[in-house]
Length: 229
Image 1 (tube, rainbow, N blue to C red):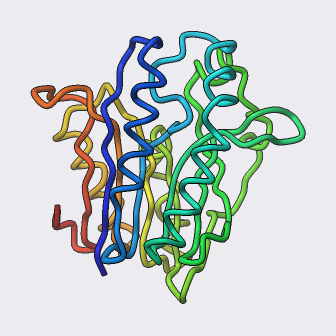
Image 2 (tube, one colour; image 1 turned 60 degrees about the horizontal axis):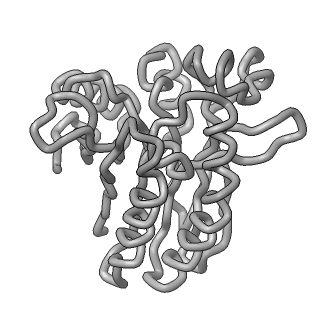
């Protein structure tokens, strides 16, 4: 099985949003039929830092539908499973959502981020009501492969890992940002997750800069904790 992780450039300059979004589309269009799984990072519909609710919603409104259509087309064109994160519209507002597409480009399911950072609730006003009650880990099965999910801040809540292990997952998809973590910290967290759940971990993040020791560090980790890439 061949995995493609997309690690796009990220900027704190909101004015670069359109430029960076076009690059995201270019990465998807560069994928081909040799790839089986494609994973992109968190908040692909906000390719640059949105400093407030208005900017975030403008960005998502402008890019989300185009992004999801391109993801579905890529899945079908490449005959690949595609995992991508953007907002989705719920009854009580927008949610941080990972979308899973099968090889036919059909939506196989969604995962809603369980641990929102304070700014997502207080500033961006994302729907968080569903996070205050217990829920079983999300499992989406495609072609007999059992996929589990974490998004960014979810990686820090290790108490969830044992319950995820009970689901006998094969692969855990991590659409992430984690822009303040060192590469070493991101590696340790991903290895700990893989080892404790006996699953492969595929984590995609955004690049702060090629010379930066924070952000980035997208990786594939085997169930024994070995970093494959």
